[in-house]
Length: 126
Image (cartoon, rainbow, N blue to C red; front, top):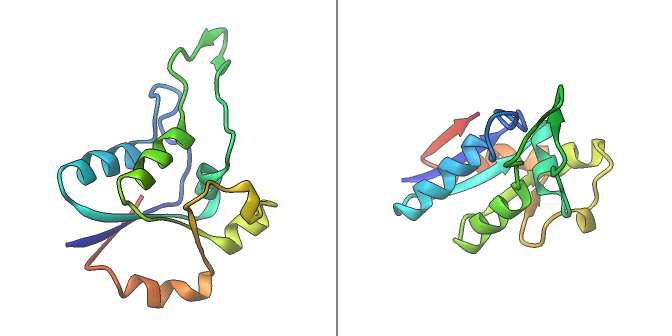
């Protein structure tokens, strides 16, 4: 079944984990043969920005020794034929333009979403 995973809330669990659970489960599901795609909206469009580096992240003197590498995680998804989309309107509100985003990430306007959703049998929102 063709599934769309929508991520709205970014950087969930990144204090104690080294990745985003939705991006991680997408990789695992794709490796198991699932046909899925990922849509980043709201603050999660930041996941698609090139050159992110969370090394040096610490909280109250406690260093995060396994910082998130969301850019690498998205590249692996793209390399494994998972289509990754961003809502362009949300990217623009955050000052992001096409050159700021990873190659291979596709843009959709908010107005295109209803028709886009029709291509999927399941839609999961995180």
